[in-house]
Figure 1 (cartoon, chains in turn yellow, green):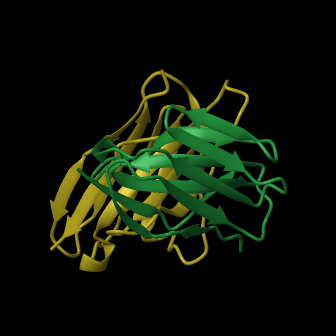
Figure 2 (tube, one colour):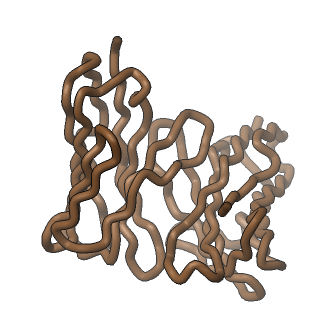
Figure 3 (tube, helix red, strand yellow):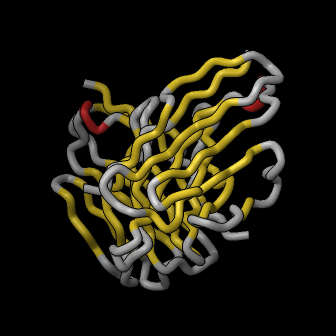
Length: 117
Length: 109
């Protein structure tokens, strides 16, 4: 149990376009989902915390108007990179906390590789 | 800002050698996790330590949480090529995970 999927796994887009990444909890309900960004040979950096039915909380330095997060249901959160530029190319990873586990364990998705040309 | 200093960042050793990875912070964490990540994949949880001084073993891997819950170590005995990967520590604070810089381990046959 506790499987998290991401779609797409890889995406290539042109500069100036927008890209949507989906994060789904497949076999549990997630009250909270997290979005991370990872540059090559670096660690995971938290971008934002997403709670179902409310606005996301962004970390310092992350532009909320550029990285739109929607958490419309207990099993789905989406991250939209608007007007993408080459410097947005990165590995985006989501994680989800189970609603009924009684702890804060995060289950990670497999990541989405975004390349902006 | 809470930081986790992870060291070393890169480690290349021969099969059969032992190694230790360290995570240190000036902050107290409610728990600390160790993950392993393969290229192009999400991190996979290895262990969670919660109690100060706690030691957990997972086959050849030994994890320790410092008494003050500010630091942790991962010790691998008799490393094998299959242990090659990126190892990440992450401290939990206020419901968020703070990741260390990661340790890239290469075990040569």
